[in-house]
Length: 391
Ligand code: APR
Ligand code: PHB
Image 1: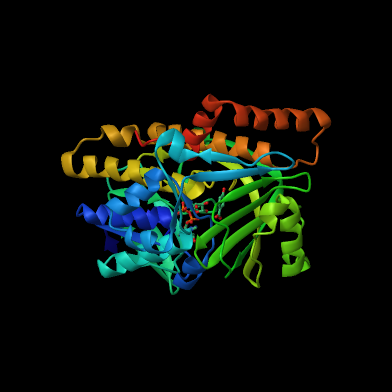
Image 2: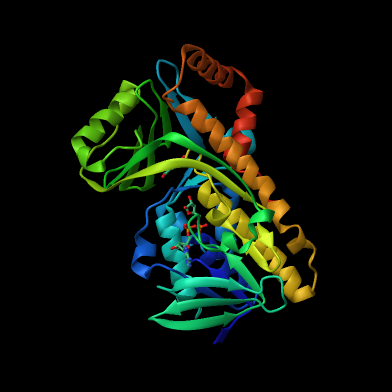
């Protein structure tokens, strides 16, 4: 039997950041992770950080590698077929910059600082079960190396992603879920080539494309694809050729190609589950909500949830002040829904849908033209793209 103040289910960015931030305030936690360490550290995910995420990572001592390997951007470009490219200019409209820095590197950093500080992270656990969530002493059952174990705690943080078990700890009749599945995916590659200077979305009648980056010698590119696409049918040459067709020729011509070091398909989905708490269980990150990658909000939402949850747990544990915990779900969900709407809106704007008709295409074009011509529309988009401030 083990004991801790906060049991954290899931060792992704949400769980590990929470564990690190609690430690900085002298609160003990144990992280239970289903996968092996190797698996967790190799996962490739999005890599654009909102201003608030960058600020928070710096404040908790995780800024150094981000400054060294990442890159600040004044905004993100939209290259629209047969139109002038448009910059979502976060610097101009909000005074804030975004940052390119991969989630894979952030996860590595989190594991490094938790190991340095003696954090307890138990990998490769099976059969995680949550108990007595509405009592004073919740506990977690799990198996490791075929042995059944028990972790007693004061609070449970469900940070186990979309396919985790924590969300099921909330009785079905209390849960309300909202979702949308999009009829396409993104085929992504990573290549050890110098990226374009900017992050750039491409809207094109052949489908959406995206040029992004991780560091000065690591580029990330995506193209919209059919859900049934087999990555093996996309050798590198075919990918590069298709990618270049979707960008305006003068930009396509600047893309430096090379062998891919990773290639995979991600489906696009929006999902929110409310509320994000039940008794002493609090959900954070993908366990409560997912967004399509358009807008790169996933990791940023995990970070804002953790910001709110950490503040609430500290108030409760250190000052017996439960007001933040009581309002954790509604506070976190306000930001979640803004990001849900923004990523849905950008997905609608930038992709080709199978049932698009002429009217839809024309309205979409008008939305882009309006954005090009209206400073008010530009400011509204920039404010949400850079991320609403934490409350
Ligand atoms: N028990 C323990 N751990 C589990 C369980 C379980 N039953 N189920 C899942 N996990 C682990 C997963 O193996 C994973 O390491 O929980 C972790 C959840 O991590 P993420 O999926 O990365 O979710 P989160 O930490 O909320 O981070 C959100 O990840 O999916 C991206 O776009 C998303 O960038 C965002 C970020
Ligand atoms: C990425 O770099 O992986 C990325 C960038 C922007 C997005 C989504 C993903 O909107």
